[in-house]
Image (cartoon, rainbow, N blue to C red; front, side):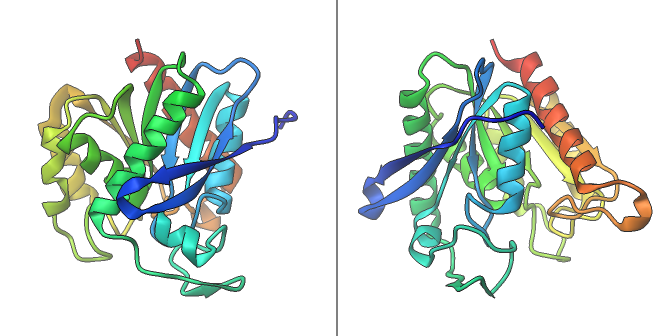
Length: 245
């Protein structure tokens, strides 16, 4: 991987929560568009998966704006395995109420737009970060956001298939990309694929063969984490090139 610029550390004000959260802006030399990227429920913006996505996208000339949700900022959750209860000295806390999570998404989008006002912008993120972005978008369009990208949409609780969490997606009027693994226990593809079909031209689904909710594949697949990351970022880039004006 070629040498990348250092991520710029920023601070966002989330007025609804009466607090500030951290953000990281990574901008390659010639950025083509900007991806506002929220983290999952169990790990923060510095988790290895989030770092990896940002770095490989930067190689593809895509800027990223990562940010913390308030509960993770207060827990000191700079890293750790997603879903861990206690890891590396930090204690996992429950996610903030949806109202606060969605307000944080809006603050992040506004901060990203202010930082790079001339770049086309997409938003979304890993698991919960993606779902909170789509919920915010369904209530009131996020200014400047032209598409949503979900890195593992959490359709239901682990091994408890249900599609209620998808209801709000039908109120989202911009293009959406779902990247999903075939072993994802939070998104039964027998439920998610028909939902995408019903969403019509707004929805695109990219299936990662053998991937779990974190896009980890079994060793017997013969694929490496790096190869899967390349697949994910290529899918994001190709899709965005087709939908951004």
